[in-house]
Length: 78
Image 1 (cartoon, helix red, strand yellow):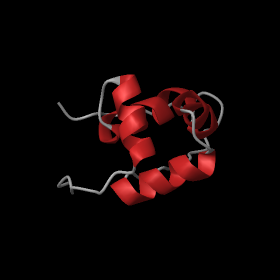
Image 2 (tube, rainbow, N blue to C red; image 1 turned 45 degrees about the vertical axis):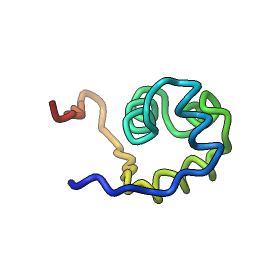
Image 3 (cartoon, helix red, strand yellow; image 1 turned 30 degrees about the horizontal axis):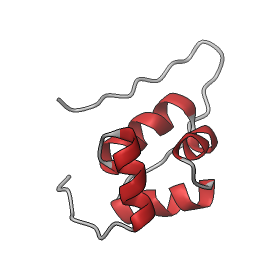
């Protein structure tokens, strides 16, 4: 997937500066690790704002229901 250049708001740039990495990297890892609501809280934004940022950056969010004993693996390139 080609990375597109998006226009970032002052708040987006502030969050990147505070966490020392671009949102395109930070957000997927954080959402996978702690979920949408907690990720938004840790970034200091509302879940709606985080959802909008993800849409703007082309980051997909999927929820998966697993039966007892099933697992899922997230693979990151690189």
